[in-house]
Image 1: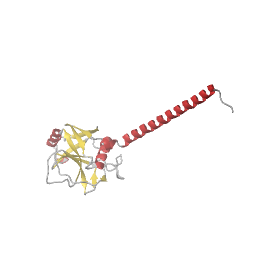
Image 2: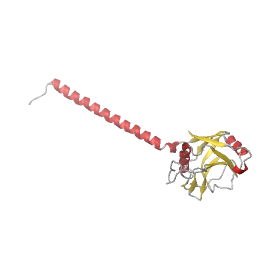
Image 3: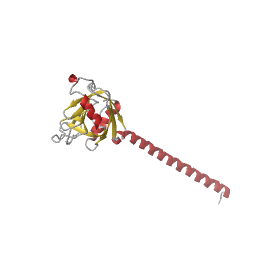
Image 4: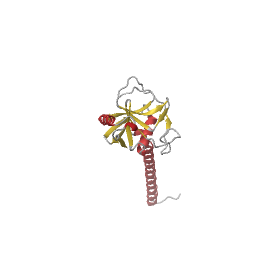
Length: 210
């Protein structure tokens, strides 16, 4: 029976082993690259799910909001999307009974991007089941229409505790954790409506997503 010389055997098995190592290395590299791409994709698509804080910059100073995701996860996600798009930038503050609010009155439902969880665009009403929350100082909300519709055009910042009100009509999604003195100063200098303004109202300049 024909046998290869020992040298040829060594070359043959050495080449085979080297090729196996190269193939193994390439497979590991491909798996790692795929994993990194998947992680990057997940990081990008879940970014709004991970944001915890935003900083609101106003003409009177800044304040920080922490999200209450378990309370209104879809409202939080939509707020982050709207804030990143500049939807609330350069809006004026006005007073209401328990605090101050801003409103984008020029959206007309035609701006982009689309809202999460609904076939609507920003400035329109989207759907999320709204739980009642006892109104308290520092809470941040959007107006609710009934128990399952939320209006993205307004942001309300509560300054007064109102134990008698359990959040009916509000989708509470955050709390001011720093800078309540700024919110109070805004309330002192802003009118209840634009028609009663004796001085220029405070304005929300931009929202920084951390």
